[in-house]
Image (cartoon, rainbow, N blue to C red):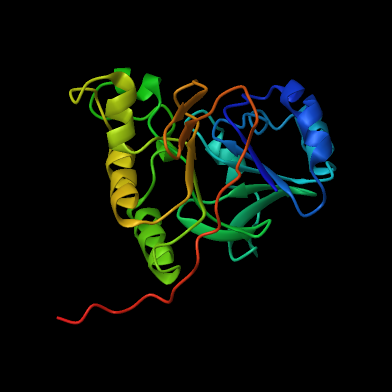
Length: 236
């Protein structure tokens, strides 16, 4: 079983939700960005990370736009459940951009990062945090990993929404979108999936039939299993 929630921003209370008592060793709680517990590297922060890592389920997160990327990138990268992760502590891991995982019998495509509101207010295209936006390598790897999966996954978990949902929620096609929204729109158009969860908008909203903006609630990712097919090369 997989549960999903939105931005935590270093608030431990989300982990005290009674719903989490139902999760077992093979299950997972996935956080859609702005995890926030890797921020200052203090002894108290490290203590909290160890506490989270001792939970009985896997605690997984895609990064948002408010993370300390310098500290985050100090953690070792390793393979886990079919994709690259950063192992933080115990059962706590970062799901890295553009990776496809097999988690609790579900195939999950993860893509964290995005543009913060602070960055949009800066001049000359500067970023609030330099690596909040993905690299060309990460974008390309995401496309390749989806192709390897036959462009079929059960769940998509991101921080930013795809451009079409961004426009829908904002009620206008003139809403400002960034390169991650545009990239994810290609994923939206070219990938078969059962559910898509994203966390940036600080909103709890189901957008029928299969899109979820998540924030401070925990929801169950009860997807219908997508049958895998081997990717076929296009014959020209």
